[in-house]
Length: 346
Ligand code: AMP
Ligand code: MG
Image 1 (cartoon, rainbow, N blue to C red):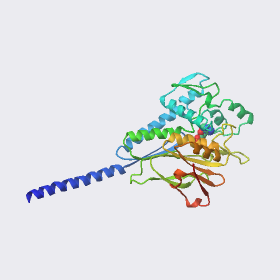
Image 2: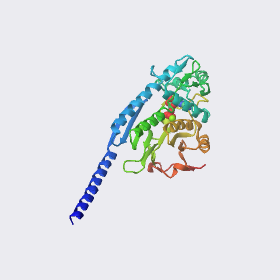
Image 3: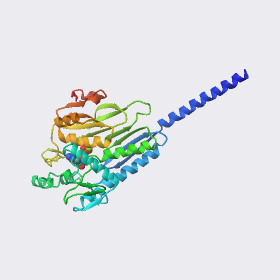
């Protein structure tokens, strides 16, 4: 009898201890930390769950600020500024800058120059980075386009060399790359659930702490609200469109910040926005800009030829083209019921 009581006691101890341990673990998982700040010319809001979340988010903030210091086109100390003012001299750059430039050149090649990392002379003439927005003369644009061409960017090891007058702009993919670095840091700190909002670029780690997929709002190009919801885990969701940053001239013409590298003028085609969903932020960021430049037909053709990402293309004519891999995970917001939804297949 006594032996039975001892066994029962030991059993009860383990059951209770087990329950307490589980509850403690659950508490840790649900411990939420948030950090909001302004960097890379945009508002950043980070949320992570778990024991180390607070420290991890501080590390991420530092990393994003460090990357901004490297890549700012206006900050005189940045590596991009130094390259852009090198007058044809070779400049030695950091591992991060080499990495992002290598990727940018690869994507420029793959998108046949729709992504154009040397577009800065034109972007700058339109005043998108200086806040003195203006419509340049046609001759000025024609002249500036002679300084644009990713094939003439020389990257050898850690050294970058541009012809005099050429200038780089990593604005199309820097935030996505920063998001990937953030994810890397958080994962190293043991974080298994996080949501990073880097100026509307969303990157998520794992699922929500309750084990459900994240419900993410896809940005609408029409009224700055949410077009619909996608339910996902472990990926990046990044949108590009002229609605993000633009100006209107005295005749009411709208000029957006994404430039068609062929013409030097803001993109003017059938697309209102492009959302890309993939595992990596840098890929989403580069492709959202590039596919926006391409226009609907070429964007769909590009998706058909290239694996590894999904897309939601919204046209000015109020159609939504959703690639087959993401279609079932997307729910259109009721207010947009009038939009026509098309599934894009391979
Ligand atoms: P995103 O918001 O990611 O689409 O990037 C847009 C930013 O990238 C602009 O504000 C410019 O700084 C830069 N940019 C504009 N046009 C292009 C282009 N065709 N290729 C690469 N970068 C561009
Ligand atoms: Mg982009």
